Each structure stands twice: as C-alpha cells, then as structure tokens.
Image 1 (tube, rainbow, N blue to C red):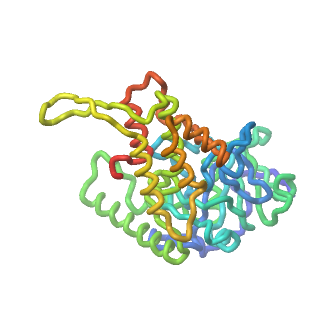
Image 2 (cartoon, rainbow, N blue to C red; image 1 turned 120 degrees about the horizontal axis):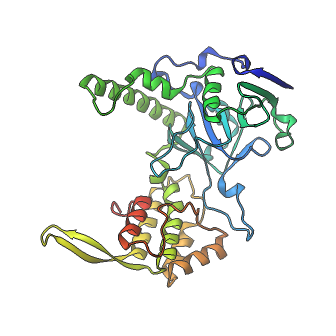
Image 3 (cartoon, rainbow, N blue to C red; image 1 turned 90 degrees about the vertical axis):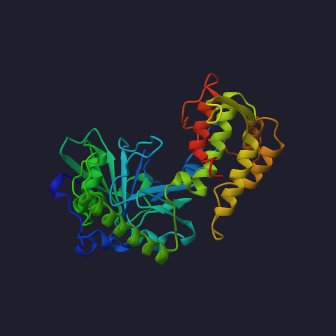
Length: 361
C-alpha cells in the first residue's frame, strides 16, 4: 500500500494504555526504542556495526551493540557524537521487541543510551521514518515495508518517507503511535528551567523527576534482567571498544608504549615530567573490564587475546596488526581528539584518559 498524505493524517492504531501522565508510569508497555541510523534494516533486522561493516580487507569494527533512546530521538552525547541529521529513524515497541529477541542479547544501559547485542529483530508495529527528497514538504508517503526488496521478509512494519527533518518527524510519530515523549514529560514535570538560575523549588522538581525515572528504570531492569550503565562509554562494552582506539591513538602518535607528561607539583609549585607506561595501564583496564562483565554476558571480541597481543608486542602498531590477523578487527576510527604526531603528550594522555578513565583504575 502506498499513499501520499498530510502529516496530520498518518493513521496509526493508537492504544491509550501506552500513554504516560506521570514519569512514575514509565514501564515496558509504555516504551518505544528509537534508533537513528544511515542504513535501512536488512530483512527486518538492525545489524550492529560489527555485523554490518566490512572493509576491502575483510576487517570489521568491534562494536557489536545496537543503540537506542527511549521515547524520543537520541540527543548528542558527551564526546560529541550527533545523530540529529541521520536520514533514518526507527521506532520499535519495546514490549514486542523483547518477545522476539534473545534475552541474552539485552545488555542494558540507561534510557538515553540502551543497547542490545549483535542485532535487533524488528517486531510488527515498528515504524521507520526515512528521508526522501522526492516527497513534497509537509507530505508523507506511507509504505508497507514488505513491498521494499530489502524488507521483503517482514510483516506489519510501516515506512514513512518524508523530505522534512527526520528527527522532528520521528518524534512526532512516537506521539502519533500513542506513546508519550519521555523528554517532553520530563520538561513538563520539572518546568522549563533556566539552568543558570535554579531556585530551591526548581531543584526539588528535578530531583523528584529523576527519582521517578530511576525507580521505574530499576524496576524494568529487575523485571527484564538487564544491567544499568551510566553510559556506554563507562560500560565494559564501550571501554573494550575504546581500548582498541586508545592503542591506535598511541600508534598514530609516536608508536611507543612509554611517554612522559607534565604534571604540576603542588609542593614545588612547578610542572614536572613523569613517566607514563601505557602498556601497564591498558592491562589494568583489561583486568577491570573482565571483572565487570556479568557472568551470563560476553564482549564483542576476545579481549584476553588482545591482552596477550599488548603483552607480547614491542609497539602499539604491532598489537593492532596482531588483532587484525587473529580476530579480523580494526579500530572504530572515530578519530576522537584528532590526535596527530605533533600533538602534545599531555593532549594524548587526556584523550585516552577520557576514553578509558585510566585514573579510576
């Protein structure tokens, strides 16, 4: 079925049971997961970067998780990654997704960054919003996904094509499907606040709203059996990915395990050079990652094998070459911090510390 209609006339089967009047009502049945991406799902499955990506040499990137925000489009994160301009938004009813995806793949996270391992099978009721310059502004073409070759083995999934802003239309569709936007409800309960001039009443409303979400999220985690992580970057999954990128940063910087950084000595009141042994630091990080993995979960690659690579390699580049040969993996290559050979040792250390939280280990 193909139709061209005004946005206000897109027909969804709405269920009033999906609505939230209060943040304390946040639960499985009132939740949709929202994924922003560059790629249309393959036969009704969202693939992780590791599954979807392969370069000309056959190498893959280590990320084996698919990321979602709950009940609104994901916002830019702390290290500057931005999904606002992605051409595809995917809205997935959470309760239905849990029924058809393996429980062991449901990793966890928090409402703004929730991740599922390997791939995500899309249930009936999923809505995909995608960019199409052929559609006049303010109009939308609604397609049954199974009519598209890449989605031919699916049932009950709608694709909405639009030339309008994908972020905005995806958020609008969440509400048209009968769900409540979590970000809007949060703003309603806390008030539209100027964060530079918070009153005691403002702070009380924020604490109350945060407590409601946290209590609801803890209940969902207990019921489903996922782990709560503050963010992907501090989870063992994110840290294991950034470990490879950190070794890559050193390889691109000066390809040595040892370095010197300037540290201010409060007693002498001047900067002093201290030795940094990144190899030992990375081994400590790996040990910390391995301890923090739940017993019923696994990482996306053999981190123990990479640990042996680091121990036995004379240079960071050698360790990466062994990783390529043994596991077919290469760094994510997001070039966080834009490290170059002329970067200062302190800049290199700050970037790696930001990725791996070396100090806490």
